[in-house]
Amino acid sequence: MAQDSSNSNSTITTVQGQQHAPSDLATLRSRIDSLDESLVALLNERASISVNIGLAKQKAATVGGLPADDHIHRPSREKQIYDRLETLNHGPLPTPAIQSIFREVMSASISLQRTTTIAFLGPRGTYTHQVAYARFGDSVQYVAQGTIDEVFDAVESRRVTYGVVPFENSKFGSVVQTLDRFCAGASAPSVQIRAEHYLAVSHALLVNRGTGKSQIKRVYSHPQAFGQCQAYIARNLRGVEQVNVASTARAAELAAGEEGAAAICSSACAGLFGLEVADEAIEDAKDNTTRFFIIGDTSDSPSADDRTLVSFTVDHRQAGALCDALAVLKEHGINLTKIDSRPSGQRPWHFFFFIEMTGHMATADVASAIEGLKAHCLDVRVLGSYPSQRPKADNGGL
Image (cartoon, rainbow, N blue to C red; front, side, top):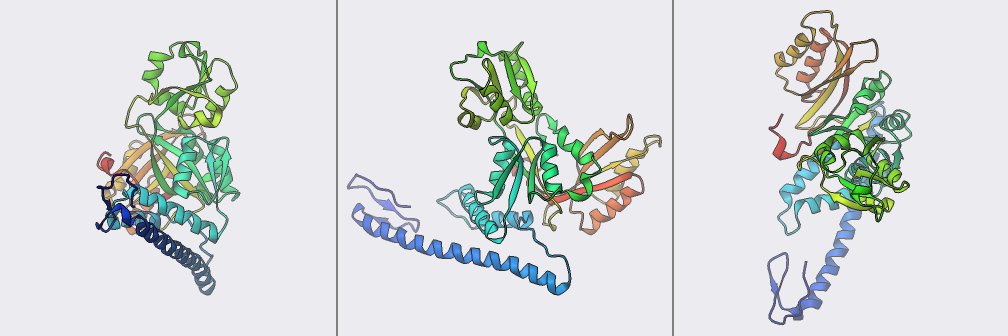
């Protein structure tokens, strides 16, 4: 885009590389106006085609006698579009800027097809809220939930279209509330993972205005945030009471109403709740990253690079039962990318195991491996398949 200059000897460079003297400013602005007209027309044309795609899917389902596929969030297609934008873009706009613009374009198109509501772990200002907005843009409706359980409930009851929940952190491990909800038998048939999203997380210590760190008597935060800031807490908040709450934004909300209280959360919460930033970037690991899941009633179709999350139990009285189950993956050439466990709640010392594997449950190799698991396991549940969004720098880190 052209830039104004008060220097008569300077030049203005257009995207096409042509040089224009400042006297051509009116011409350049006229060109911008013309391009804006074209952009508006193209955006509306794209939106119309998007609406027609939705109508075509409904018609195809009616003709074929199949249930209508009313999902407007297609993680595999979305990833394909973003990857293509990266290939097409040659500047000067950076690719993340182009992708952000298209996020809003797609968000607006989604809103034309149907009302879309997103449940997230609230209140506003949580990292989950940030992820929800990054995924779905400004044109959908957002519904804050007080707990992770409530996000699952909202999706299961179809009160919302999709939900966003935190799953694991690069330093502090899995979010047990999410794993425990996946353990619950009621959630397995009706909730599926559709997508994953990685967010670089930087925590701040927020206080009420005029409160020094030496005056802090109590600090609120989510257990994950406390775990990610242990070194800072040991150095700066020794002896201060730590209170676990449902979300980091809830921590800020509570601290704002209490003298001598502080919160560990996003610095964005300062403006939302009238707090001050006492310290920024207090997380122990500067590459601190949290992975989130977008959940719905079904998973998306396969992409070129997917993962599948499965939970199961085994008969712990049978020697080598877990080893036999995991050997199935090797036999089918499936790579295991994560393993975790949680108490099942069914009886003492009985556990649900969670394994994440490469591939999509609809492909022959993964489907065959899952069938093989059933021969060695109890309660095998496929929790969803989703396109891998692992940041490129970390692709080989598993």
